[in-house]
Image 1: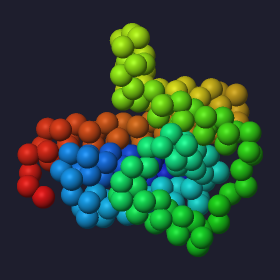
Image 2: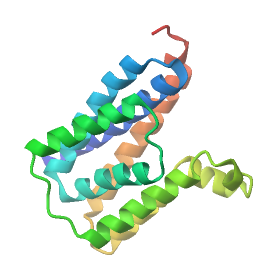
Image 3: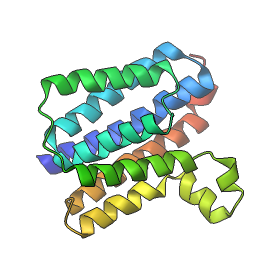
Image 4: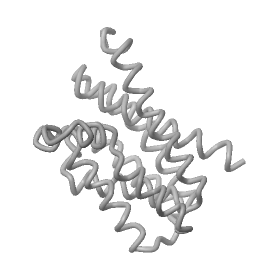
Length: 180
């Protein structure tokens, strides 16, 4: 069951995260962005409450974004509130603080590098690397190979990332032209 539900929830989390951001940033629709953010928060909280590795991933992303000052809209605040509220009712697994710190640092590095013109101007490689936030992907893979995370966590995290990119493409091709 875990191998069916978790990748779906990771995927939905990534998709809703990107759609919420794009609706807020491009369409300036705070209400719809917040509603989609609620869906994101629900999916992320369920994964966090049901999987130690999922907790590392989503708490790491959350704290990395907070430290990177990327929580920049009401949709992020609503998503965060839903996530934290649900975690009050779910049991959060015990986490190794060193592993969590490594994942937080990787998420923070990705957020600092993403959309950073100074870094992008250094090379095409760095632009691509940070545009697609590869630091955390590499770190999660290394932690999985070393046995600190389950290798399936890396696969599930790729489901999150692929769905995030699918959300980007769908928004840019279809949703950006809709009136909402």
